[in-house]
Length: 52
Image (cartoon, rainbow, N blue to C red; front, side, top):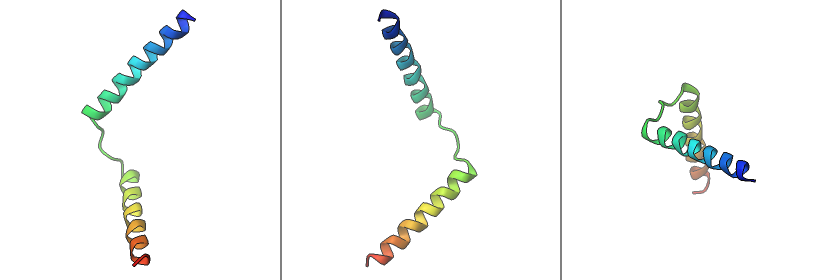
């Protein structure tokens, strides 16, 4: 049980570091992510027009 708890703490510390690094030094969005955002924005704009 002690080993399992230690593994959880280590994983938690590692996860915290990965999260911190991602927040403080984000990567630039990929082209596919940019396209997905554009598609989403179009979808939302069209949805809002249909609700008026």
